[in-house]
Image (cartoon, rainbow, N blue to C red; front, side, top):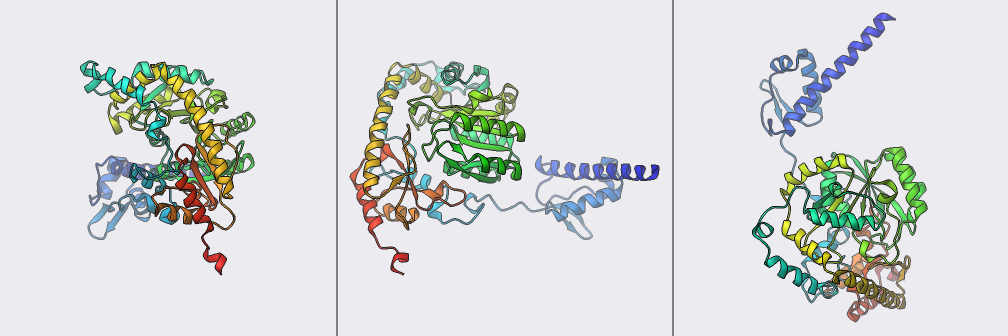
Length: 477
């Protein structure tokens, strides 16, 4: 009995020593002290360095060879393996048709000319934004002192803007001090920083199905494993959400709060509480993207408000209601994570853009911004009704009638592929957003997302009418 215990103890120590040797080599490669093609220390010398037996180093090297981390050259030694090919985001995951991958809508929308129609894009027309307020703010900044115009921003970002964001969050029931808020260049950079901070390659991340397509793109860039859960009018399908947590043990869940993209749905209080209970049970961290907050007529539940920024990270930006050119977003999170995020921000963007933050602050402080938002909500409501009526006349039905926002998630008549319709519309300089760009499971073949603010031109509906009426191969067959 005693001898068995001693043997088991020695085996455990041996396993620990083996892991330590492998970790040391990986660390040297990650830290670039060993790069592609470099020769590893000899077995004997590294055994002395690590204070282990030569047989332990031999086994560690052999395992690293099996993993493809290093290469063995008989008679010469062990060398760091060649670097992998450069990351090609479009090649990660299932091979999708280019017309419906997560980059297609963004590429077409960003590259289109001013005269092209963009009902599939995710932003408002310039004429719907507070251009006069922006001009006033720019004139004010043109008279600012040198540091405002020329210096980097502070690591956390402009203090006065963080204070204002904290007050705005408080209006939505989220308590956060300015020191819990870090400014970013955009909402996209906010998620990117958080993925760098929280994820390792291969970690599992949960998303809604459908969800904002750039969530997929960002997670591919971080080499995460993506799992999706169907989204309902009240939030994620809770039975399948619980099943995904139990089966896949994801590190993160990324979702929209308030107004969901692309469906326009609103999270219910009951679903919010269930999501948070499961998050606590499974150690799940949630990134809650609140980019559409100012579009709301009635305050919707925020996970961060219920959670108190414990497991929930709250992010946002001002690109949808103020300007996409003034790139400014933010992260609100637990105090003990702020220092690590500051280090990452400095490493990836140094001080950040002070001028954009000053511009946003000036516009938000302008009393006209509140009136702009009130008018914008009313204008979106009118456009929502008008576009929905026109789509219904073509047999294109809404998945639900959104309470607010700018998106309609709508279903084409049976048998019509949204990707085919999008290709045909593109030939007429109309950029649509086919459903499978938003769906990891590729289950949204018949859906299109319409931005009602960009969908008022009659040419859009004429193109849709022609595309729907065109005979399909399946119908002829």
